[in-house]
Length: 640
Image 1: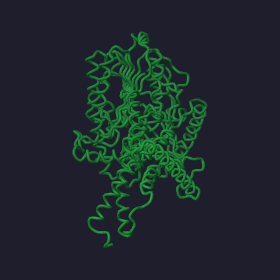
Image 2: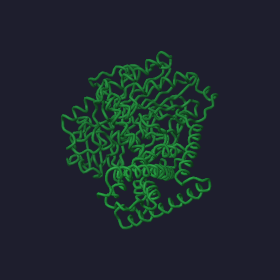
Image 3: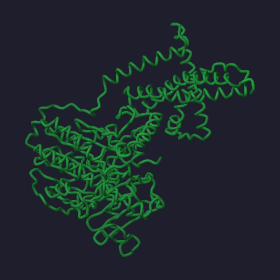
Image 4: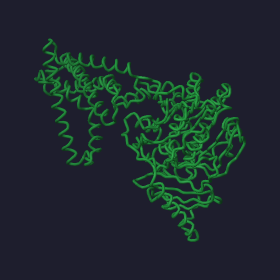
């Protein structure tokens, strides 16, 4: 110990730390690049932005672990003071740090295999060992070629590696600059097609995420939503509108395709729309409309095929403090840096918190107005997706105060005071949403567009505040989840002030809008034109859980809800008298006097399911990238 003191130790510490950084940065670059290549193959994302992201941020990964290893090696000299140098130290540092980013990714890859290799199983351990051995061999080959090529031009292998890094980064940067567009997804448009619909109205489909019907003034709730109330006064209020699911991805898929969840198959985080799906946007585009969409939820990405039929489709990504491609997946270390930057940012600007979750109603409206102001020559169909009042729920005016419900639904997570607080913030979000919608309608009126528009305002699903001992959404198919608002404002406010009490569904929206403007009514569509003489007798909602499909069927008098015991906190069968018990608080399934009615509803449901199963499309699947996981986690869809 005495032979390694004072200045000599600090000199060794500096030398090893410096060497660790130089080798570590190079290892981080290579490890990040290999990680990005694997991610690109898994996610079928073959644009250069993912690789450029790795080359831009993983040097920081190398710096971090290069310093750590450099310090550790220096401390070893305390115990082995006579060792002046560790042979092949730089090579070992380079390979070790290059392998490190791949650990979590290898775990995911092994679990995706047909053998379902677990990390702690014997087969899994053997597979890990074999893969790491292959990586070591590969990185040794990289070092070998760097040494050979570097020697040919008189450079050390690390210096030559940095030159290669700079060259590859420059090439990728040029590719990104030449191919990138921040404006979203585009499809070609023939301007002459617009002539076909010059006498038709503009069409707006406004879908509000997580909006309960009974929290709006048109439905009798004591809340300040004057702009939605004015839309209702100018249009038709549908009192019995029901969605086909209780969370965003399957519900909006049903709205767009007029198919039930079991038919379009988009029922999990990795299910995406079949590219051959017949959507409302596709129908209106074929009719001559310029179709444009603004989505605000990562479930609705173009990568999930929700852009089908749109000429222009823009995902409004939440704020990212690090420069990344909003449409590209990112990597674990980049997300780590983003979370770190976010925490520091919010220490100084807590009122900006909402921007890390979604674009609020005013922001979305401003982006819509900006687009309309530049495209007034087009007759368009516009899909607008507002995220307020989806959780987290925010205090208004923004001051950094918000409530993010726990991802799981254990009763212990929710007290009456907590639910009252959450509901109060939800109310404030709804009122803020109304202001944003009001700004949009004022602009459309000033531009002469509002009067000549078909405006459809609805929600994908509702929200629970302990109505059935739970919170948020996606867990059940009760009233608070599936009973959503629907307001239709016709051109020139025809039928203004009408209240319609017939049963209507989300799958009816696409057929109604298409028929109204004379567009194609696809034969696959399951919904009805609301304005036709046909009456909907039953509404069906479906929710896939644990490989089963809990289903609810209802009319205006009664409802049957079969959970198949996928949630032990819920009864396996629920039967409700809607007239006497509209909030579904009294389950009559155990009452023998209702067995006949329950059996009749079960038979009806089985018959309808048999019809539905014979129609529809086969969904595809897409693995969640790390960016989407982070955004879904922030919105409460994924635990973590």
